[in-house]
Image 1 (cartoon, one colour):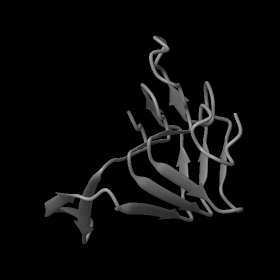
Image 2 (cartoon, rainbow, N blue to C red; image 1 turned 90 degrees about the vertical axis):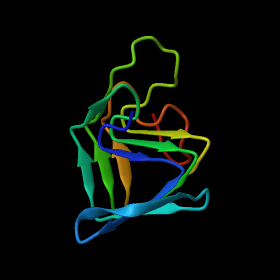
Image 3 (cartoon, one colour; image 1 turned 45 degrees about the vertical axis):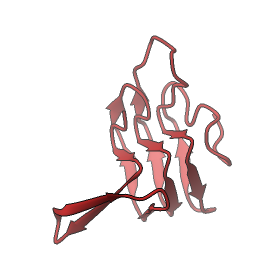
Amino acid sequence: FGGGIYNGEWLIKIEDGFLARDHDKDDNATLTIRDTDIKGNTALNGGGIFNNKAKITLTKTHVTKNTATDSSKLHRVAGGVLNNEGRVKLDDKSLISNNDPTNCANTVEDCFN
């Protein structure tokens, strides 16, 4: 899950480009992605982004040409962004499009399949 980015319930610290040893469970942790292209990734589900019980804000970010390959249809299949019991917020300059088989599988507000 999450070919490009997986965002879960854990607070992870990255310092100077390296993962810090400390990490804690934090249900209020938020990932903000700015001025970024998330493109050409593949995963079982959430080819671009898989958000699991967490919060993501996309600002001036494009999620395009990502693929989900879950053919079993046990889950909602989203090539772009799959949101599972979390919250994904898009600004008006962000775009989720041209993902296969759907952009968000109806899991993200303001994302059209």
